[in-house]
Length: 384
Image: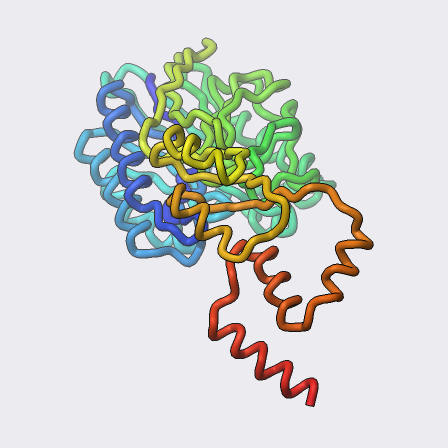
């Protein structure tokens, strides 16, 4: 059987206040094109479809349109929510999504009560058993796994509890099926990109690679945005990575989906297929005089600029953006100096000038006239 493994779409995420909805639209269209051209039997979506639980209409539209396009192409979808998704909302939509060929397993379910989804191949000659493990927080682990009746008595910590849960799923695998684990979780030792929520990639959330079922044909994971194969797992275990470069921690990462060809009892064949849609994120080290050269190189990429200057200059951010309109982060790199002398220099300024200096350094822009007027009013009240 052939699967397309994707996830961590994060549809709805902006970058420094700029919408990326057109980029998500193009990337999801490419996912559909790849699934169709590769003749996959099923698309696996490993969580974090949305970027926020407070969903925008545009994000919903893109995600639901993607599922409908795959349905029209005759390709079923199995999906789970991640930590950015609302599991309750996904559960509410599940009956509707089921009518357009998308099986949404919104909560941790026992394999005999909906947690294991079976999907047949196009030819009808093979069947996949897909163990679905949506995101569950360690703090709510026992509530989230209440259908596993014997879990509470044996639960010691999150890693051990997840290991027990995975054993339950593995116990229902069939030798004549392509057995797949679809999960949204953090495996200890995986390399985050830096754009994930830091708390959810810490030791409290970590699952040992040795806990993953050794008899699985393939383990399809979401949560870590950097595409990678998980070391230490007995079965072929991979994070597909995010759909776009979501933040500057992901700059330089090539984005892709994974086409997985599996057969019962055999190692899978995995092929990375690039996702070309979406703007690149780049970082440049520059001086003011060098910006023109960088402008010719970065194209339409979003840019983080590390700008070397002698001292903060009012309006410097505006000057940079005149040359690099897509400069989203502008970081001032100042020469090392005597901190005591810097404090003395700052103290020599009047309070209004001190405020302007602080604001310019913190925000890389001059304070607006309205803000200065407000400062003047407050300072006058305090000083009088």
